[in-house]
Image 1 (spheres, helix red, strand yellow):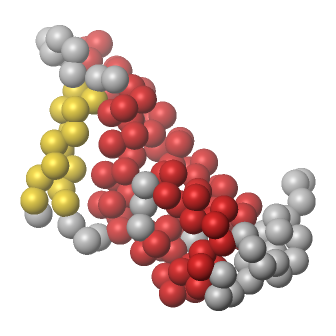
Image 2 (image 1 turned 45 degrees about the vertical axis):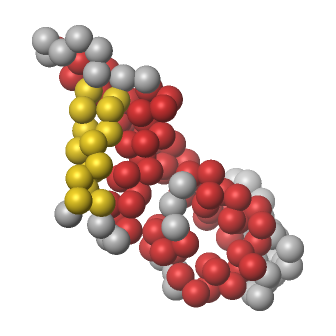
Amino acid sequence: MSQKQPPEYTDGWGELIRAHRSYIGVSQRTMAEKLKMNERSLSDIEVGRRSCPPGFLNAVQEVSQDFYSDVAKLIKTADAALEESDCEDEFWFEVPITDNPRREWCRAVVSRAAVEGGNIMPILALD
């Protein structure tokens, strides 16, 4: 089993936590929901008003892994759909724009899959 990171309440980890969140492209609200915590608490950790609790970086990394897993699944789904269809080279995916954190996660996944997979074309639709 890997060691908890940080091993104890630690100051100075906020920027690293924020970097993980920014890299996957989600708001504090969405990340806090994924971490099952209050958005204000996450904000406080990111800006250094609150120490990073033991094991918190591990939890953030697990959310990042879930994100990359979702991206890989979508790319695989799009590739399979293209193989089975008459489409030439693109899989269209509609993503409603809302303030719902679950939709934001979906939008971030689709956007990353579009860039990494090369054959997914997101359509942003107003909800």
